[in-house]
Image (tube, rainbow, N blue to C red; front, side):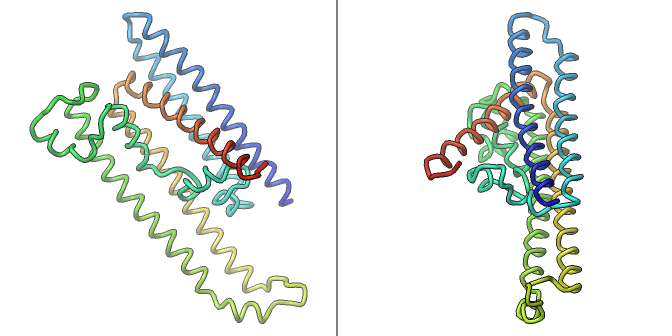
Length: 249
């Protein structure tokens, strides 16, 4: 059963990464068509972006289903590279990292100077209006607060697990090192809490993207998601290369 679960989880990830490549190709094609016409076609762009978000939601739903059987695998997935795992936060990416990419697309590190920009209306960032940047700043602050709360909850959960009377548990193990009923219950509660943490983190990731796309114009969101997918695929590629250098598969 464990081997079967791992196979399903690995297949889900591989299908997800293949979808990233397919979506990137579709997004680039759509962007090229927009560049070749004076019609921005916001409706078609919005429809494409909504499809992308729905795919993200479907992926999280599928992960949630598989996590009911083996949630700990998603926190240190063997199907990801060591680089990917080193960047992981509660079985995925940090929602706050989404904003770093937004600022990078502005062509400047506006995070540190955003407050001054909002006060004096400086136009150093022509791609985004002052009202957009204000909304992005507020969303980032809310997202960071929620992220920090989830981080604290996860740290508390891990602390509770290590605070279990491990010496007593070890002493009570059978000669075959089988878990007794009390330990099984404790681990069951721990896994349930891990599933809840992963679900909350996935919801924050999805909701942050949705709220960000409400702020951005369709063409801006298109540029953003193209850059995001390029970066995600590059991280996987870099991770594979690094693992090969260090004797990985």
